[in-house]
Length: 310
Image 1 (cartoon, rainbow, N blue to C red):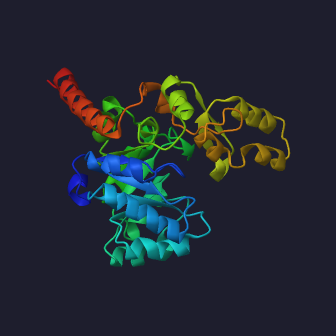
Image 2 (spheres, one colour; image 1 turned 30 degrees about the vertical axis):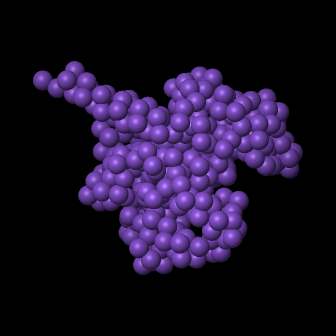
Image 3 (cartoon, rainbow, N blue to C red; image 1 turned 90 degrees about the vertical axis):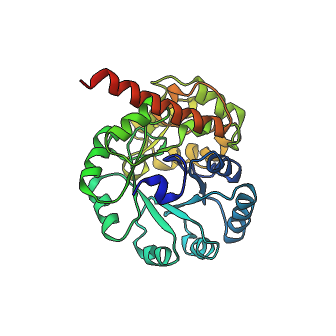
Protein backbone atom coordinates (compact mmCIF):
# COMPACT_ATOMS: atom_id res chain seq x y z
CA UNK A 1 0.00 0.00 0.00
CA UNK A 2 1.31 3.45 -0.90
CA UNK A 3 2.21 5.70 2.02
CA UNK A 4 -0.24 8.32 0.78
CA UNK A 5 -3.07 5.79 0.93
CA UNK A 6 -1.91 4.42 4.28
CA UNK A 7 -1.88 7.86 5.90
CA UNK A 8 -4.65 9.40 3.76
CA UNK A 9 -2.44 12.24 2.52
CA UNK A 10 -1.82 13.76 -0.92
CA UNK A 11 1.98 13.74 -0.91
CA UNK A 12 4.35 11.29 0.87
CA UNK A 13 5.97 14.18 2.72
CA UNK A 14 6.18 14.02 6.51
CA UNK A 15 7.07 17.14 8.45
CA UNK A 16 9.58 15.89 10.99
CA UNK A 17 8.66 16.77 14.54
CA UNK A 18 11.11 19.24 16.05
CA UNK A 19 11.16 19.19 19.84
CA UNK A 20 9.33 22.15 21.37
CA UNK A 21 9.00 23.70 17.88
CA UNK A 22 6.42 21.76 15.84
CA UNK A 23 3.30 23.43 17.20
CA UNK A 24 -0.23 23.53 15.79
CA UNK A 25 0.34 26.44 13.38
CA UNK A 26 3.04 24.62 11.42
CA UNK A 27 1.44 21.17 11.68
CA UNK A 28 -1.91 22.40 10.36
CA UNK A 29 -0.27 24.28 7.49
CA UNK A 30 1.65 21.18 6.35
CA UNK A 31 -1.38 18.89 6.63
CA UNK A 32 -3.62 21.35 4.80
CA UNK A 33 -1.03 21.47 2.01
CA UNK A 34 -1.23 17.70 1.48
CA UNK A 35 1.66 16.46 3.61
CA UNK A 36 1.51 15.06 7.13
CA UNK A 37 2.19 17.60 9.83
CA UNK A 38 3.57 16.16 13.06
CA UNK A 39 3.05 17.81 16.44
CA UNK A 40 5.72 17.80 19.12
CA UNK A 41 4.71 16.64 22.61
CA UNK A 42 7.90 17.90 24.27
CA UNK A 43 7.12 20.38 27.02
CA UNK A 44 3.41 19.55 27.16
CA UNK A 45 1.35 18.41 30.13
CA UNK A 46 -1.77 16.33 29.51
CA UNK A 47 -3.91 19.46 29.77
CA UNK A 48 -1.75 21.60 27.50
CA UNK A 49 -1.44 18.78 24.95
CA UNK A 50 -5.22 18.41 24.95
CA UNK A 51 -5.53 22.15 24.32
CA UNK A 52 -2.89 22.03 21.56
CA UNK A 53 -4.79 19.21 19.83
CA UNK A 54 -7.92 21.31 20.01
CA UNK A 55 -6.15 24.26 18.39
CA UNK A 56 -4.77 21.95 15.71
CA UNK A 57 -8.13 20.43 14.87
CA UNK A 58 -9.63 23.91 14.64
CA UNK A 59 -7.11 24.72 11.89
CA UNK A 60 -7.23 21.47 9.93
CA UNK A 61 -9.52 18.53 9.26
CA UNK A 62 -6.69 16.66 7.55
CA UNK A 63 -4.69 13.78 9.09
CA UNK A 64 -1.73 14.66 11.31
CA UNK A 65 0.69 12.96 13.65
CA UNK A 66 2.02 13.45 17.16
CA UNK A 67 5.60 12.67 18.12
CA UNK A 68 6.50 11.06 21.46
CA UNK A 69 10.10 11.54 22.51
CA UNK A 70 10.26 8.54 24.83
CA UNK A 71 12.80 10.03 27.24
CA UNK A 72 10.12 12.40 28.46
CA UNK A 73 9.21 11.64 32.09
CA UNK A 74 5.45 12.06 31.55
CA UNK A 75 4.92 9.66 28.62
CA UNK A 76 2.42 7.55 30.59
CA UNK A 77 0.39 10.70 31.29
CA UNK A 78 0.36 11.81 27.65
CA UNK A 79 -0.65 8.46 26.14
CA UNK A 80 -4.29 8.54 27.35
CA UNK A 81 -4.66 12.00 25.79
CA UNK A 82 -3.58 10.65 22.40
CA UNK A 83 -5.90 7.67 22.64
CA UNK A 84 -8.98 9.55 23.81
CA UNK A 85 -8.41 12.24 21.19
CA UNK A 86 -8.13 9.63 18.40
CA UNK A 87 -4.81 10.93 17.08
CA UNK A 88 -4.35 9.39 13.60
CA UNK A 89 -0.60 8.67 13.78
CA UNK A 90 2.00 8.52 16.56
CA UNK A 91 5.71 8.79 15.80
CA UNK A 92 8.19 7.68 18.45
CA UNK A 93 11.88 8.22 19.04
CA UNK A 94 14.62 7.93 21.66
CA UNK A 95 13.37 4.60 22.97
CA UNK A 96 11.09 1.68 22.22
CA UNK A 97 7.30 1.98 21.99
CA UNK A 98 6.91 -1.73 22.85
CA UNK A 99 5.25 -1.16 26.27
CA UNK A 100 2.33 0.74 24.74
CA UNK A 101 2.32 -0.45 21.12
CA UNK A 102 -0.75 -2.67 21.56
CA UNK A 103 -2.71 0.08 23.32
CA UNK A 104 -2.14 2.49 20.44
CA UNK A 105 -2.77 -0.03 17.67
CA UNK A 106 -5.93 -1.31 19.37
CA UNK A 107 -7.18 2.28 19.49
CA UNK A 108 -6.79 2.49 15.70
CA UNK A 109 -3.68 4.68 15.90
CA UNK A 110 -0.88 4.06 13.41
CA UNK A 111 2.56 3.85 15.06
CA UNK A 112 5.71 4.88 13.21
CA UNK A 113 8.99 4.68 15.15
CA UNK A 114 12.06 6.63 14.09
CA UNK A 115 14.94 4.14 13.90
CA UNK A 116 18.74 4.48 13.53
CA UNK A 117 19.70 1.00 12.26
CA UNK A 118 18.45 -2.20 10.63
CA UNK A 119 18.25 -4.25 13.83
CA UNK A 120 15.88 -1.82 15.52
CA UNK A 121 13.82 -1.50 12.33
CA UNK A 122 13.31 -5.26 12.30
CA UNK A 123 12.33 -5.24 15.97
CA UNK A 124 9.77 -2.48 15.35
CA UNK A 125 8.28 -4.43 12.43
CA UNK A 126 8.03 -7.54 14.63
CA UNK A 127 6.03 -5.74 17.33
CA UNK A 128 3.54 -4.28 14.85
CA UNK A 129 4.84 -0.89 13.70
CA UNK A 130 2.84 0.55 10.81
CA UNK A 131 5.99 1.92 9.16
CA UNK A 132 9.41 3.17 10.22
CA UNK A 133 11.40 6.34 9.63
CA UNK A 134 15.00 5.44 8.78
CA UNK A 135 16.79 8.59 9.87
CA UNK A 136 20.40 9.23 8.91
CA UNK A 137 22.95 11.16 10.89
CA UNK A 138 22.71 14.10 8.47
CA UNK A 139 19.58 15.22 10.33
CA UNK A 140 19.41 17.96 12.93
CA UNK A 141 19.03 17.45 16.67
CA UNK A 142 19.72 14.05 18.22
CA UNK A 143 21.30 11.73 15.67
CA UNK A 144 22.58 8.20 15.16
CA UNK A 145 25.74 7.07 13.39
CA UNK A 146 24.56 5.79 9.97
CA UNK A 147 24.09 7.97 6.91
CA UNK A 148 20.77 8.17 5.09
CA UNK A 149 22.18 6.73 1.86
CA UNK A 150 23.58 3.66 3.62
CA UNK A 151 20.71 3.19 6.09
CA UNK A 152 17.60 3.54 3.93
CA UNK A 153 18.23 0.81 1.32
CA UNK A 154 19.35 -1.65 3.97
CA UNK A 155 16.19 -1.06 6.02
CA UNK A 156 14.04 -1.29 2.88
CA UNK A 157 15.55 -4.72 2.18
CA UNK A 158 15.17 -5.87 5.78
CA UNK A 159 11.50 -5.14 6.58
CA UNK A 160 8.14 -5.62 4.87
CA UNK A 161 6.56 -2.38 6.10
CA UNK A 162 6.87 1.08 4.50
CA UNK A 163 10.17 2.86 5.11
CA UNK A 164 10.24 6.65 5.29
CA UNK A 165 13.63 8.26 4.65
CA UNK A 166 14.83 11.06 6.92
CA UNK A 167 18.02 13.07 7.21
CA UNK A 168 19.59 15.23 4.51
CA UNK A 169 16.36 15.74 2.56
CA UNK A 170 15.16 19.25 1.74
CA UNK A 171 14.56 19.61 -2.02
CA UNK A 172 13.32 17.77 -5.09
CA UNK A 173 16.67 16.13 -5.77
CA UNK A 174 16.93 14.59 -2.32
CA UNK A 175 13.30 13.44 -2.34
CA UNK A 176 13.89 11.75 -5.70
CA UNK A 177 17.03 10.10 -4.34
CA UNK A 178 15.12 8.74 -1.33
CA UNK A 179 12.37 7.31 -3.52
CA UNK A 180 15.00 5.76 -5.81
CA UNK A 181 16.45 3.97 -2.77
CA UNK A 182 13.08 2.35 -2.13
CA UNK A 183 11.67 4.73 0.46
CA UNK A 184 7.88 5.05 0.50
CA UNK A 185 8.14 8.69 1.48
CA UNK A 186 10.32 11.27 3.21
CA UNK A 187 10.53 13.00 6.57
CA UNK A 188 11.89 16.55 6.53
CA UNK A 189 12.62 18.87 9.42
CA UNK A 190 15.24 21.48 8.56
CA UNK A 191 13.39 22.84 5.51
CA UNK A 192 10.34 23.50 7.70
CA UNK A 193 12.40 25.49 10.19
CA UNK A 194 12.26 28.18 7.53
CA UNK A 195 8.46 28.03 7.17
CA UNK A 196 6.57 31.22 7.98
CA UNK A 197 4.33 29.31 10.39
CA UNK A 198 7.16 27.80 12.44
CA UNK A 199 7.12 29.40 15.92
CA UNK A 200 10.82 30.21 16.27
CA UNK A 201 12.65 33.52 16.22
CA UNK A 202 13.34 35.22 12.90
CA UNK A 203 17.03 35.03 13.79
CA UNK A 204 16.86 31.22 13.90
CA UNK A 205 15.17 31.15 10.48
CA UNK A 206 17.72 33.55 9.01
CA UNK A 207 20.56 31.36 10.28
CA UNK A 208 19.03 28.40 8.42
CA UNK A 209 18.70 30.38 5.20
CA UNK A 210 22.26 31.71 5.49
CA UNK A 211 23.80 28.32 6.28
CA UNK A 212 26.28 26.67 3.92
CA UNK A 213 27.04 22.98 3.51
CA UNK A 214 29.73 22.99 6.22
CA UNK A 215 27.89 25.10 8.78
CA UNK A 216 26.68 22.31 11.11
CA UNK A 217 28.64 20.24 13.59
CA UNK A 218 28.03 17.46 16.11
CA UNK A 219 28.45 17.74 19.86
CA UNK A 220 28.14 15.01 22.48
CA UNK A 221 28.60 11.28 22.13
CA UNK A 222 26.59 8.06 22.16
CA UNK A 223 22.88 8.69 22.64
CA UNK A 224 23.64 12.38 23.26
CA UNK A 225 25.05 13.19 19.80
CA UNK A 226 23.38 16.39 18.58
CA UNK A 227 23.77 18.24 15.28
CA UNK A 228 23.50 22.02 15.39
CA UNK A 229 24.58 25.06 13.44
CA UNK A 230 28.06 26.28 14.30
CA UNK A 231 27.78 29.19 16.73
CA UNK A 232 30.18 30.60 19.35
CA UNK A 233 28.39 28.60 22.06
CA UNK A 234 28.69 25.34 20.12
CA UNK A 235 32.35 26.07 19.38
CA UNK A 236 32.88 26.56 23.12
CA UNK A 237 31.22 23.20 23.82
CA UNK A 238 33.55 21.51 21.32
CA UNK A 239 36.53 23.22 22.88
CA UNK A 240 35.58 22.09 26.38
CA UNK A 241 35.00 18.56 25.09
CA UNK A 242 38.47 18.45 23.57
CA UNK A 243 39.87 19.66 26.89
CA UNK A 244 38.02 16.84 28.69
CA UNK A 245 36.24 19.39 30.85
CA UNK A 246 33.93 18.28 33.64
CA UNK A 247 30.49 17.24 32.27
CA UNK A 248 28.85 19.73 34.62
CA UNK A 249 30.73 22.58 32.96
CA UNK A 250 29.50 21.55 29.52
CA UNK A 251 25.97 20.98 30.82
CA UNK A 252 25.92 24.51 32.20
CA UNK A 253 26.39 25.77 28.64
CA UNK A 254 23.91 23.45 26.94
CA UNK A 255 21.11 23.47 29.54
CA UNK A 256 17.90 24.79 27.93
CA UNK A 257 19.98 25.87 24.92
CA UNK A 258 17.30 24.86 22.38
CA UNK A 259 14.68 26.96 24.16
CA UNK A 260 17.12 29.85 24.08
CA UNK A 261 17.63 29.37 20.34
CA UNK A 262 13.88 29.33 19.76
CA UNK A 263 13.73 32.71 21.50
CA UNK A 264 16.60 34.03 19.36
CA UNK A 265 19.34 34.06 22.01
CA UNK A 266 22.38 34.50 19.77
CA UNK A 267 24.90 33.94 22.56
CA UNK A 268 23.47 30.98 24.45
CA UNK A 269 21.19 29.19 21.98
CA UNK A 270 21.76 25.81 20.32
CA UNK A 271 20.33 26.21 16.83
CA UNK A 272 19.69 22.59 15.84
CA UNK A 273 19.60 21.93 12.10
CA UNK A 274 20.53 19.28 9.56
CA UNK A 275 23.45 19.29 7.13
CA UNK A 276 21.03 19.98 4.29
CA UNK A 277 20.40 23.50 5.64
CA UNK A 278 22.71 24.70 2.89
CA UNK A 279 19.99 24.21 0.26
CA UNK A 280 17.30 26.12 2.20
CA UNK A 281 17.42 29.57 0.63
CA UNK A 282 14.28 31.42 1.70
CA UNK A 283 11.58 31.75 4.33
CA UNK A 284 8.28 30.66 2.76
CA UNK A 285 4.75 29.58 3.73
CA UNK A 286 4.61 25.87 4.57
CA UNK A 287 2.11 25.23 1.77
CA UNK A 288 4.50 26.70 -0.80
CA UNK A 289 7.33 24.55 0.58
CA UNK A 290 5.27 21.36 0.26
CA UNK A 291 4.04 22.13 -3.25
CA UNK A 292 7.47 23.12 -4.53
CA UNK A 293 9.12 20.07 -2.97
CA UNK A 294 6.79 17.62 -4.67
CA UNK A 295 6.78 19.48 -7.99
CA UNK A 296 10.58 19.53 -8.07
CA UNK A 297 10.81 15.88 -7.03
CA UNK A 298 8.58 14.84 -9.92
CA UNK A 299 10.61 16.95 -12.36
CA UNK A 300 13.80 15.41 -11.01
CA UNK A 301 12.51 11.85 -11.36
CA UNK A 302 11.31 12.50 -14.90
CA UNK A 303 14.47 14.21 -16.13
CA UNK A 304 16.74 11.68 -14.44
CA UNK A 305 14.91 8.82 -16.13
CA UNK A 306 15.20 10.47 -19.52
CA UNK A 307 18.90 11.12 -19.00
CA UNK A 308 19.98 7.66 -17.86
CA UNK A 309 17.52 5.14 -19.23
CA UNK A 310 18.20 3.71 -22.74
